[in-house]
Image (cartoon, rainbow, N blue to C red; front, top):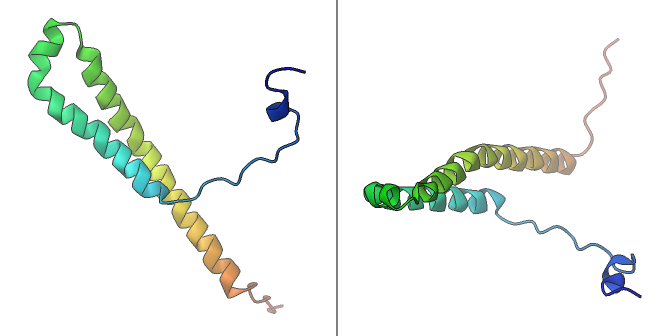
Length: 98
C-alpha cells in the first residue's frame, strides 16, 4: 500500500467548488500587481543597476494578464445570474404561432 493510496484510491468524494466573490478576488489581485508595479517604478534605476528589472516585469505581467481574467469572471458571473433568473422565472412560454 502506497503512501498516498488512501487519497487516490477513490474512497473520497471531491469537495464542492468554492463559490464566492470571484470578481472581487480577481479585482483585488489585479490591483495588488499594478500597485506593486507603481510602487517599484520610482526605483527603476536601482532595479536596473542590480539586475532586478524582472521584478517590475513580473508585476506588469500580473496586472496585464489579470485584466482578461477580470473580463472573463465578469462575463461568467453575468451568465450565471441570467441563468439563475431564467430558472427562477420558470419555463419559457410555448410559441403557438402557426
